[in-house]
Image (cartoon, rainbow, N blue to C red; front, side, top):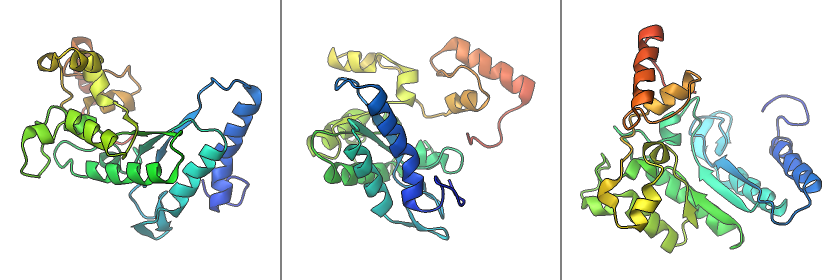
Length: 237
């Protein structure tokens, strides 16, 4: 939001938009059990984007993201989902690309910074974990697959106070029963997300979003769409 109006320009003006939303919710719904939270992009990854030091630089500056989450907490946020990137510009940062997925590690740094700056009662939820899958991924460190998996990094980051819990996006489309299967020791039955991002193509085309690898109807719909409209040249929302 830019421009000379009450929600544009300065950080204070831009933050006012969401702060007023929180204040209105708390005023209208006077129920301590009603949970409110936000998903934020800690660093959008391009010059002038949120979390950058200025309009002409992509250097990361933590000051505004930290101020934002603190302001949300002060206004009653029960949880913060920490993300990164901008789906319309830096999708591979928002949802790490399977070909070069290493930007996923930036998410861990951002989660830790948010965790360290909020009260213990405010739940910090980490994102971008689907790319790890069962350890069969293109991440470069020469370590066993067991130390490159979703389960490994979720347990490690939660136990080391990087975040309190994790959010699952693409992997939920691939197999919404993944947590149940893990709990019951049936990990070999999990349908893992391949990070093909065909689900994103359905989203961009304003279709019902589902996994085109593990859902036959979604796979057929995508094929029909490509025949009708052609394959997307760029996957940007």
